[in-house]
Length: 259
Image (cartoon, rainbow, N blue to C red; front, top):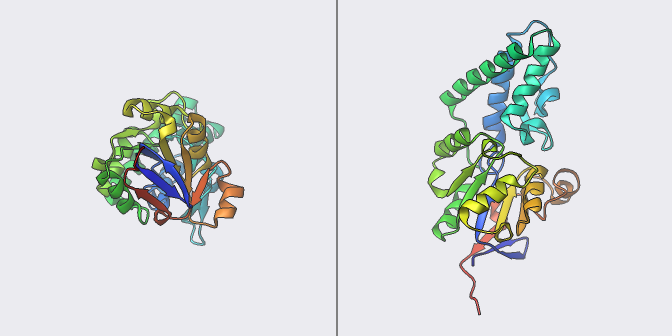
């Protein structure tokens, strides 16, 4: 069985499950652009002012007003597409639109943002991710993606980065009854891989990922976050069993000898 070493701790595993956004791909390059586009389309179609994006979805903005970071506990990081649509639609309803019209406008805004994103395809790999995923693939370690995104969209983003063939499964929020932090996606992935959750490692960038993995009984939950590990553990990823700042801190060894 392959052994994953994280912070000098060794975990025998039979598969790895990856969150997508902020774990496989750079979150801001993709979702910062998409969020600004969707918000702009929606705001231009309603009569009256709506709260800034940072108050609605938990984005963080630079001096020029562009999305530069995100709250790891906010709706954009942890919510489903349906959650984000509902948050925007509520603003239209609050300004006097019937709920159905407000939701229709939110969906139209999403379609416009999706079309803009399709043109730029701003899905960029996290540093070190491709080489680590390739190593796992070459050693025969099954991998799956468990994401709050829709399955079709997640598949497309992996294709843009050229890494889709490495993954056995892509489990989107639309395939389960309950999204993160519930264990449903991990349980479904393990069932389809023919494994127990105790045999898999889960890696992600939000505490919802950690709670999902822990609730399923994963061998280890790994928080990937580019900041001081102590700060991350205390304030951002309190439920992570391990914290790393880059993929270089993950070491996968060949199958261990069994007696």
